Image (cartoon, rainbow, N blue to C red; front, side, top):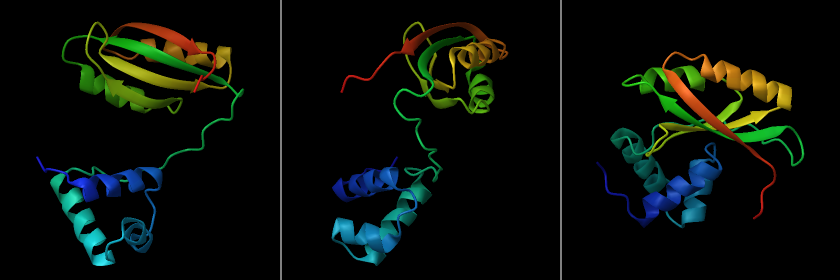
Length: 142
């Protein structure tokens, strides 16, 4: 496992905000050379500290659609297969492993309550899903 220093953490933070940022912009923001940023990126990728780069879809505006958190209980050693199946549902915007009574936590965005009902039924039919509990998010209070 690689130990991350302050520069590594700052670089990863910038990439989380914009995974397509050019090396020159990253170097400027970090006040280091482009060669330093490129060397850090190469090391972080090679070590597995950075697993890849991804697309982030535009978030739905406030008041549009339905957002929910679903807690999922998984049967035995089927967690990896369940994760692969759930990743195939585009309405699941994030999936987390957790401890305690539940094995996974899914963040779900649906167009409507009818759509949420359909998504929850799809999730429950995934082989290895034993139980689930969903809470609809009413509003954010930041």
